[in-house]
Length: 244
Image (cartoon, rainbow, N blue to C red):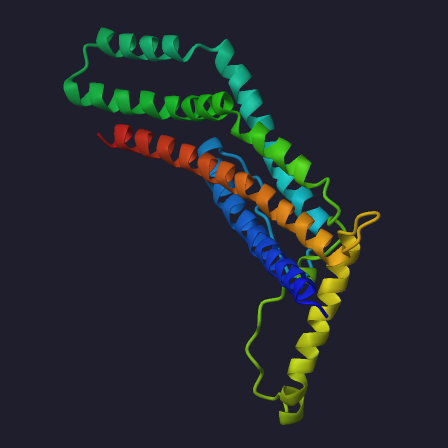
C-alpha cells in the first residue's frame, strides 16, 4: 500500500479521534451552560448524557432541543420585560423607600432586592442581543447535514480501558489483532458513511470531509463558551451588587 494511502488513513483516524473528543466537549460545555441557565432562569432543562453507543444524530438533536428550550424561555421573558419597563420598576421601588423615610440600612437592603429583581432581565437582554442561542441552533443544524448522523460515537474512537484482572494471557496476546480488526472496522464504517460519488481515493475523500466536519465544530464550541461567559459575568456582577 502506498505511503499516500497510509497518510490518508492516519488523517482519517486522527480526525475521527478529534470528532470523538469534540462530542464529549460539546456534552460537558452544554451541561455547564444548562446548569447556569437553570439556576438563573429558574428552569429545569434536562442535562445531556453521552455514551459510547450514543447515536450521533440523537446526540445533536438533544443539543438542539436544549438550545430551543433556552431560546423559548429567553423569548418569553424578553417579551414580558418589554411590556414591563424595568426602569420604571426600579424607580417606583426606590421612590417607595424614600417616601417611607427609611434609614440607610433599610435603603441598602431595598437596593439589594432591586438588584435581585433586575438580575434575570439583564441576562435575558444579554442573551437576546448577542443572539448566542440562535447562532448555536443555526450552526448545529448545519452540522447535522453532514453524512455521519447514523453512526455511533464508538464508530469514531473508543477510549482504552484498563485490562481486567481475569483476562487470560492468551486473550492479552490476541489483543493487538483485536485492536487492528477494530481499526479496520472503524475505517470501513467511516469510509462508507463519508463516501462521495466518483471519488478516485475514498479514504482521502473521507478524511477531507471528516476534517471539514471537525473544523465546523470548533466555532460551535467557541459560541458555547461565549454563552457560559455571558451567564457567569452577569451572575457575578449581580452577586457582588447584592452582597454590598
